[in-house]
Image (tube, rainbow, N blue to C red; front, side, top):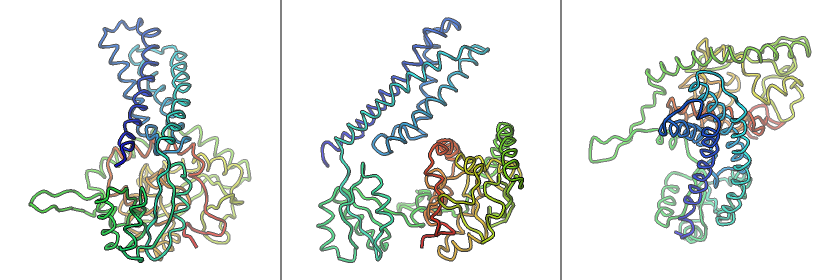
Length: 449
């Protein structure tokens, strides 16, 4: 392994440690100068207050991915830090109010947030430039099966700051020609290879210490969620294949009821304004009701604010396209910020949906997907969700097969913490317009071609 490569994580770790230290010093300075005299804490009490703030901002930055300097786009890193500073500032202010048992002057906390932002944005820009200079894009070889993965290559090429696709080749040329080619590259991408060929190439890359990226099959994702069994002197993997356990479902349903009630109360003013705007625009119905599928394929009526014209589906069911003319001016706004989905809080309260889960599909579209992808039905092992794994890591126009992989990843790795993380990441994607991109005008569903 290249010696410089070994220090990559050390650079990332050091830069993030300095970031966290500066954030802690900013809050600590304001605490000691402005607030500490009001409370008269002993030394360790002061440390606890500052330490709690540091833990909070570390938590938000970690969840939003702000510490992945060498991995995420510069805009994503900046957005992650801005949101982390904003949310940590709110939590920090509430912390001060609780300690004081009264409202405190918020201006000093606003100063903390401004100073942190003023330092962090140029700091991460400098670190990212240094990182890119020290570690240029990897030279990669794509190895595929029977069909060239042009779409995957296009996606990888959108990150030329990190990856450099230098060539692609089919595994069918044989190991005698393939292995010498692999040795010339920093990394390989294995795309849709037969299991036997993929296993052989992965073992070779492991032996040669060559980084390997793999497009997973459905079975691979199920294996990732399996438990290790150590009853014998032979390793075993246990995949229960039952979705959520009964205790997980009870806890998840309890959280859904509490969060949906809180969400309805908080969102009520916004829902009233949106309802008035939709009604005043064209006089049509405020809500759009449509049959969708939830756990075990059970149909239910989903509620959304109407964002399209009243005759939007006179030619049949289809997903929203890029620049879709059926979307009204009011609908364009509420779709961009996802507020058209606020009425689904009532679906969650009723028990038809969950806060987090696979997005519910229409029966007619699900049937079309199932014709091409028989495994598509596997995503209904859990309730449909207001947001989900595929929503925060994919896009509106992500292919059904990739969405299925995301959904099974969620099901097989479910935890309450994963739900919390997805809900926080949902807040982040409200500021990322590319996540709401529609399908092409020539498509009625997300199926390609």
